[in-house]
Length: 126
Image: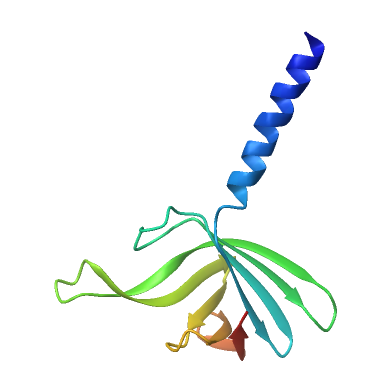
């Protein structure tokens, strides 16, 4: 009976781990940073408020993990989300933006505090 419980536990754990990998990861590499974006909403959702950010500073190895959301323009009705712009994350008063540059190959990492831009780095999606 103990073996059956162990097998069931391993099955459930592997199912959860496989489900976690089911979400697509998008990696933006800039000169000084590597940013992994994971959108944790079902495919077909236009917007998502469950996006994770894992950033690595390539110079010093520091990592940063954040939760955020997608950003879109609004359609003519002023409500419906239209064109995808990128992702928005926040840590205290600091805002992290990962912009889609429109061609699908390039992106921009931007960090702001209040109205001051602290960092802007263009990179390539991997």
